[in-house]
Image (cartoon, rainbow, N blue to C red; front, side, top):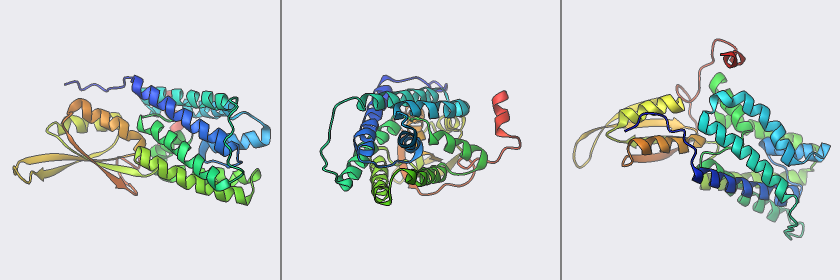
Amino acid sequence: MSTSKDESIRLIDLVMIGIGCAMFGFGLVFFNIANHLADGGVSGITLIFRALFHIDPAYSTIIINVPLILIGWRYLGRQSLIYTIYGTFMLSLFLWVWQRVPIHIALHGDLLLSALGAGIIGGFGSGLLYRYGGTTGGTDIIARIFERFRGVPMGQTLLWLDVIVLMFSLVYIDIQHMAYTLIYSYVFARIVNFTQEGAYAARGVIVVSDLHQAIADEIMDELQRGVSLIHGEGGYSHQQRQMIYVVVAPSELHRLRQIIQRNDPRAFVSVINVNEALGEGFSFEIPQKNWFSRFRH
């Protein structure tokens, strides 16, 4: 059994992340942009830049994300960093391609159908992207930094960043289009939940394995999450067992599954919805020194 970190780059991950970026970009171009619907996060900012300054979202996606990746590279890990850079450039590429493909989806100006189409296609693409450990950078990096150094849960930061971006989007869309944008956002979140088991909420994971200590050590070392060992007893065998309980962000589920799989492929794993998680291992304590100083080491 190997105890080293598995930071290998898998072909299946890259393929599925690419497909996810293609789907999200398709929805953004042919539903959001085509029907003047806004969006949250970095994608929403690129749409604002497009409306006000006529900057192609394919370019502004990279322009906005590169500084964020440089700021957050230290906390992403090798695999996450590579997947984030890859996802960012793949999304930018597909945004460039889709804007130049002569496809017209005839919705006859129906904003409800536009919102539903954008939410379903974009949500499925993003869910697929997250499910295979990918991300397109953006507000995920900001939320991770706030969680680590200010103790603010990622979901809370992501939600407020989306709200702020949507409010600024009122500079180029009217109230009617904003109302349908909110419908799109709701459908998008539900489809992401269905595809990836949640985007903003946390997940509680119970692991039953004879190799519980090795798994727990890697979770604490690689994911920087606190774990609890719970004493259990088999209902049939009455054998004493140790169970692991850990709370992780949904974007970390992929890496957690990898840790469990390489240590004990036969482990029993149960994933539980967690509406809010506070405390050690999830809400990080505020460091004594300015976080910018960490980049000097």
